[in-house]
Image 1: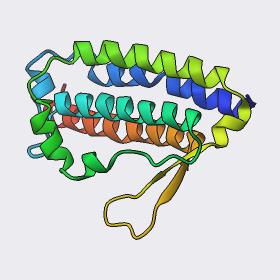
Image 2 (image 1 turned 180 degrees about the horizontal axis):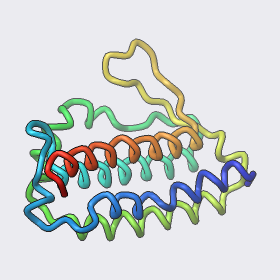
Image 3 (image 1 turned 90 degrees about the horizontal axis):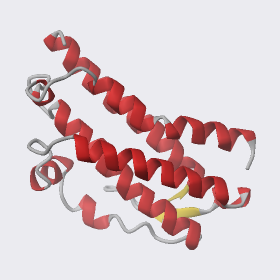
Image 4 (image 1 turned 120 degrees about the vertical axis):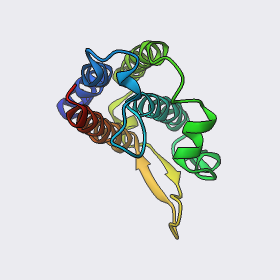
Length: 166
């Protein structure tokens, strides 16, 4: 593994800490705050964790079968808001999801440290909604995607906290 990959893994390993820091000090009622419309803090937490868990499974698949089609079409058939409703993201406790997130992230990092460096170049194929052609996503790109995903949603959570002064 090269230094750049190890640096990415160190950042990736901090994802659970970053999400927990974004909600630190909030009580159950505050987790249900929104920016006036859109998702609550609680829903952002579940969305972030569940998205990460889905992609962790895809990463494992890509490590086993380079070039595989990423089986995510089922998710694109509904809006993310509809998935949040169906998965009851606005009602569930965040603790179990955060615990699962911490363990699954540590497990994936161990796996990525164990595979040969060339495995980071393996890829999966995905066709995004409304796209004409498929995109190839390497293991490295997917890890980077999740760092950015966390950036976006911790910013969303911080914006809600700022609106409500918490």
